Structures are given as structure tokens and as C-alpha cells.
Image 1 (tube, rainbow, N blue to C red):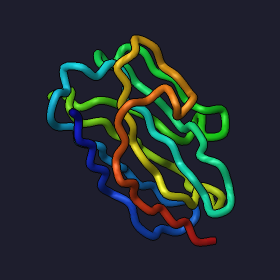
Image 2 (cartoon, one colour):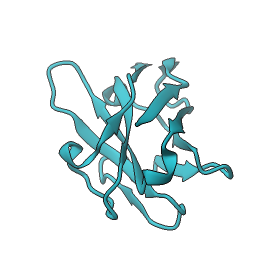
Image 3 (cartoon, rainbow, N blue to C red):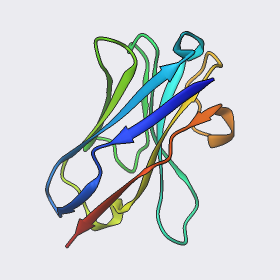
Image 4 (cartoon, rainbow, N blue to C red):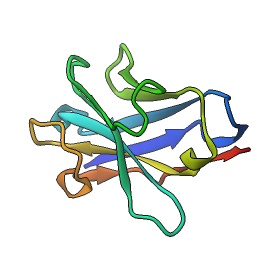
Length: 124
């Protein structure tokens, strides 16, 4: 099993920056990809970004491209989501997910493990 714990959420103003962290533990050697998803009230879960184990392959949703950056820490077990120029429409619960398949999927069903999520609220 793999456990994922997100941190770094909170309340910020529009235009601010925030960094989310996702720390993995357990059988982390089985993970190929780590992704971030978000879900706003009344909306479907949305893919945000994903990164492979080496950090060499990255996928970012068009809706956040140029503002959000995904990266992996030197220890490989932590993935970061740097969010700049935040907008009120970025308000959502952000969750990280890990998958074992050797791909960078945007579908949530392709991921095997999920964290509890962290709330990000951007005020106007």
C-alpha cells in the first residue's frame, strides 16, 4: 500500500502564490506517476498536473498552464504543486494521487492511491 498526505492548503487572495506538497510513504517503489486533481463544489474532479517518478515527464492541464508547476523533490517521495497568480476559480479541494502504470494519465480512474485532499480558497 501507499499512503499520500497533502499539505499547504489555505486561504489566499487573488494573485497570490501557494505551494502544495504531497508526501508518499509505504511501497513507494511501485509508483510511476503522481498527479494532482481538484474538485470545486458542484463540479467534477478535474486533472491539474502529473509527473513521472524521475521528474522527466510532466503533464499540465491547459486551464493552469503557465501558472502552476509540478515538481518532485530530491528524495523522490514528495511532489510539489507550485501555484502562482491564483484566481478565485482555482478554489477547490486539491488531492494528490499515485499510479503504478507507466503513463501520465489525466483520468482519475487511472490512479491507484489517493490522499485526503487539502482545501485551497482564493478570495477576490
